[in-house]
Length: 404
Image (cartoon, rainbow, N blue to C red; front, side, top):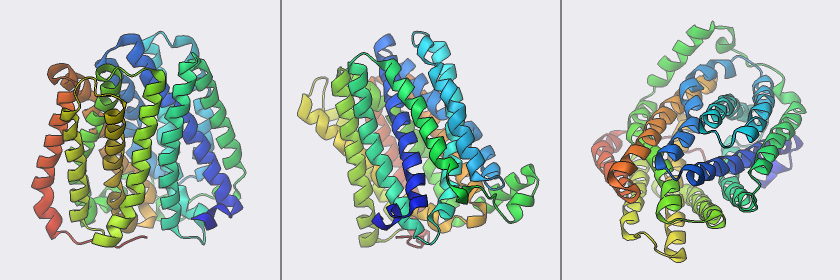
C-alpha cells in the first residue's frame, strides 16, 4: 500500500478524497450533536441522519449510468464545487431545523454523485498497481478519517464554533476539486457499450446484469435485514451517547473517535479472517452475527456506566460494524464486472442505503416506544434471527474469488 502513495497521480487522488472525507466527518458529527442539544429528541436526530443518507438511496442507481458514460473528472469536481455554497448556507439557519434539513438533503445529492464517481474511478487511478491494495488503503484511511473527524468536530463545537466547522468543510471541497482537476487520467470518458447506450437502456442493462450473478443476488437479499439494523443502530448509537449516557461535547467527540478506532481494528482484522477461513457467504453471515451479539451487550450498560464501560462499548461496536464489511467488499470486488462497475455500485448502494434509511426512520419511533437501549437490544436479536434464516443459503453458496 505504501507503494501507491509514491505514485504522484494516486497521491493527489488520495489526498483529495481524504480532505473531502475529513470535512464531511466533522460536519456530520457536528450537525448530529447540534440536533441532539437543540431539541434533545431522538426523532430529530433520526431526521438529521435520514437527511444525510436519503439522496444516496434515491439517486444512487440513477447516478450509476452517468459514471459509466461521463468523465469521472466532471462528476467529481462538479459534486465538490456544488456543495460549497450549500454548506455555507447552513450557517445562518442553524436554529431552523426545517431549513437545515433541506440543506443537508442538497449536500447529500452532491455526495451521492461524488461517491459513485469516486469508486468507479479507482481502477483508472490505480493503473498498474494492485486494485485490492488501493481499496484496502482507502478502507483503512476512511476509518482513520472517521476517527479524526468526529474528534476534531467535538473540539470545535466544544469551543462554540459550529460555524467554523462548516466553513472548514466548504474549504475541503475546494481543495479536493483543485487536486482532482490536476489529474489528467480522469479527463477521458468511459469506453465501451455503456458509453454508447441510451441512458435508460444502460440502466436496465445494469440491473439485469447484477441480478444475473448468484453471489450478488444473495448479497442483495441478505443485506436487507443487515442494512435495516445498521440504520437503526446509526440513530440508536448517537442517541445512546447523547440522551442515555448524557455525554458532553468533548466526551461525545471522544466516544465517536473510540468507535472509529474500533472500526479501524475491525478493518485490519477482516483480511486476517478471510485468510484464515476464506471469503465465503458463511464467513459474512458469521461476522454479521457478531455484530448482533455486540448490540445485545448494550443491555448490560445501564444509564450511567462510567467512562471505561462506555469506551469499551464504543470500541466493540466499531469492530463489529466494520468487520462484516470486509467479506462484503471482497465479494463485490471479485464478482462485479468491470464494464458495469458504475451501475453495479449505484444499484447496490441504492438497495443498501434505502434499507438503511428505513432503519434510521425506525430508530426514532423504536427509541420512543422501547427506549434507546431497548431498541438496540431488539435490533441485535433481529440480526441474529436473520443470520440463522440465511445460514442454509450461505452454506450452499460458492465462495467469492479472493481479491487480496
